[in-house]
Image (tube, rainbow, N blue to C red; front, side):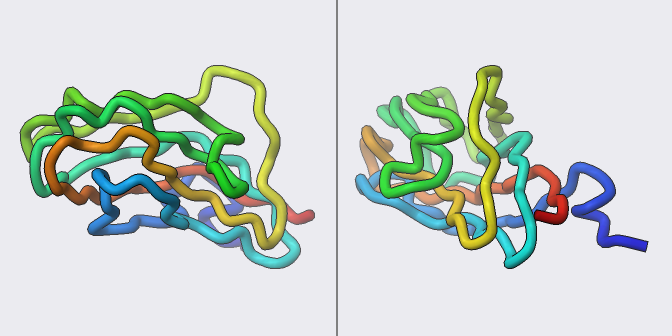
Length: 126
């Protein structure tokens, strides 16, 4: 029997302490050799401080992480008990072996803050 992440939607990565203020890219998941990854959702949770001011985050592959979902506004995450589920309701490309799926902060939180980001999706053989 195959791995759960090949048979059902699964958390393929859970990355704690992602910098949500400083502009830049953070890799969340690297697609394994011989696989194709289909991202389904991102959950941003357990932020260390308010994400007020964080109005532009991109998710996906490439230098700008802009192949899956762009301009995600997380500024409403102001309490540590808040969380947001991000899904892409548009056409996009799958992620192939070696692709690095990540987040890029464009306009981050006003103050220093980190968050845990869960990547949910599934894998198929290439």
